[in-house]
Amino acid sequence: MNKIVKIALGVAIILAVGATTASADVAKGQKLFMKKLKSSCDNMTGAVVAGKHTQAEWEAINKAGKLADEIKTVCPAAKDGALKERYLPDYYDFFHEYANDSGNVPSC
Image (cartoon, rainbow, N blue to C red; front, side, top):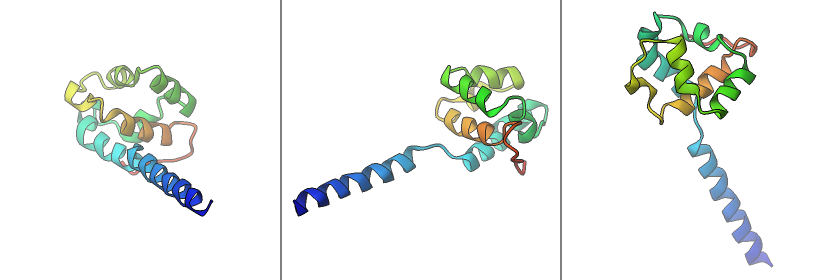
């Protein structure tokens, strides 16, 4: 019985660490926005871009797989290199965190 508990605890720890490592990051999304998108968004701040939608709207856009399209709508000059698939989860976390109904304001 003791061995089963140790194995279960070990598996739980591995899953917890794996889940946090694979998740996106608000700070990384902000850095990516500043580096890759700000100049192509007519120098709009991150607060302005994120404030285009509510958190629920950003969530719906992301779940529909339309985040890159929405970024292109808000920032028409955005290059495809700035919209790589690996950047989208971080952009989403950033936009969701600082949406117009969140009460949060980014520093960019």
